[in-house]
Image (cartoon, helix red, strand yellow):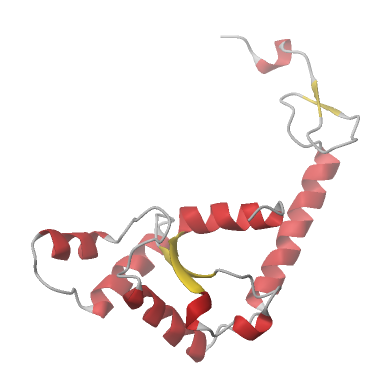
Length: 151
């Protein structure tokens, strides 16, 4: 296996940057700038005022969407098991408990995602029509597309 230090250096992946990197990723300056942008976005996210009204809307969106990701169809284990064995609907608290545990273990879980971002339409922040249930993987992919200007 060839070691990275034996490979030719490649340009930074930021357009117009002439710095060389081992793998063609961002150079240290652009990496710091990108992390700063992510942190600014996080600060905005934490200031969105997700209070009791949003928690209620989030729960209603999950129930409306049958606890499934609207993009890939992923669902919590307890939901899948109840469906598979035709046991009816699992208790909401049991589903929420599994989702909290999965979130804390950094495993797949669900988000109530704003289809049209709050930055674009703050008036739709508490609109059920603007909420979609997405797993964290699909939510991250959608957010990345939005950051790149792709819908």
